[in-house]
Length: 469
Ligand SMILES: Cc1cc2nc3c(=O)[nH]c(=O)nc-3n(C[C@H](O)[C@H](O)[C@H](O)COP(=O)(O)OP(=O)(O)OC[C@H]3O[C@@H](n4cnc5c(N)ncnc54)[C@H](O)[C@@H]3O)c2cc1C
View 1 (cartoon, protein in one colour):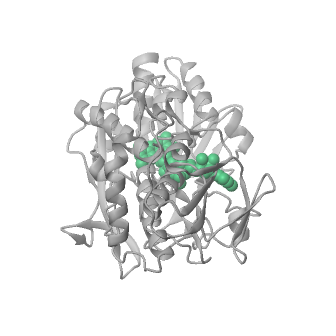
View 2 (tube, rainbow, N blue to C red):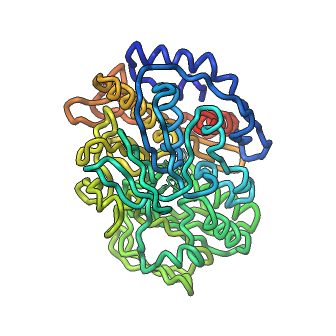
């Protein structure tokens, strides 16, 4: 993956193009440090150079509030300043002290990486680009008066609001949020649950069974659960013994991404260890005994005694549950009420004017992935700059997605696609042969290889460097 692939691919106005040309010339001034951690990647950290970027004077004067400093929010904050210029005041609202990357966090489970190696701060966005950091949580949106209320009681007015809060997880399979935190971690947001799951796997012995569940799509990171099953299977069989088993209970009818390579991984590379079950229903988990029951594709009821249970529960846009701030604002207007429908031209909500939603919380036809969140952020930043200049958003945005999936401790697969706006369905669709093509699908690696594993490190560092520095 080269940095060129991460560039915003949509066609910009001359105004914005000239600003990005300035950005391109200055970008190498931004410093990064590598901590040399293993796992196919060293980590690019933010906040090291202290260099201030000379932003363009575009004539735009506006206040933009960005909620959430994850993959999508951090990217949009940076590019709003770069492309909007010094008159666009960007305030980033985020309650945490640092962001912990989900990407690569499956390697924490196997002890290959540390959580601290995946930690990113917003220091460089503040230092280099002048993004104002507000350590608080969004509590409510007053869209009529264009202002937000934060957990510290402060009120921020906005001309445009960008919301990038990620996802919340349902209480599912008989489990509660407390079970996820203390006994049966999903670890689908990197942090303490990742450490808990790592400790549970470390305590496993030869003959133990690890059970993982996968919710019905859409969910965060389509290849992610299958990737996790592979690295856990590799770890258990090489470190704990050949009699360990990985049981995947997938509520989807088939593998959702990289079907050929994951099929090979389950059937050949990890044969005898991985048991992949699709079309599973009625999953029930006892968090104390770790007994899991489910109904298989044939309609038969099954029971398994697990040592480690890793349920990935259904999720939804953060704040979109009953009484949540997103629901109160009327942003969760997908058919199932779980996601925020947006225009893929600007990421402006189709329900609430002046509010843009990007990243996993949005619904627009793109997969829920960190690389995609970074791309959506650039399309959104470009559109906001145009709107603030009295122009219309680009009518033909293009985005790309790339994802590397480790299969063992030294080999990986990958998946990539270019997406283009389809004016007929008004969604982003996979493009091929220069345009949206019926039936086009993402491309997966021809082989599972150590070369892919090496490229994975370059891709990850480039993506995180583009997002946080
Ligand atoms: C194990 C795993 C592996 C993955 N691997 C890949 C991969 O290889 N490639 C890839 O592209 N993607 C991958 N992903 C998916 C990727 O991590 C997500 O798609 C991405 O993080 C989504 O970005 P986001 O900005 O929407 O949300 P997040 O990154 O989750 O960020 C949301 C931020 O919003 C903040 N927030 C929430 N509520 C509020 C509030 N009320 N006020 C203020 N701030 C708030 C949170 O604190 C958080 O910092 C993986 C995910 C997992 C779990």
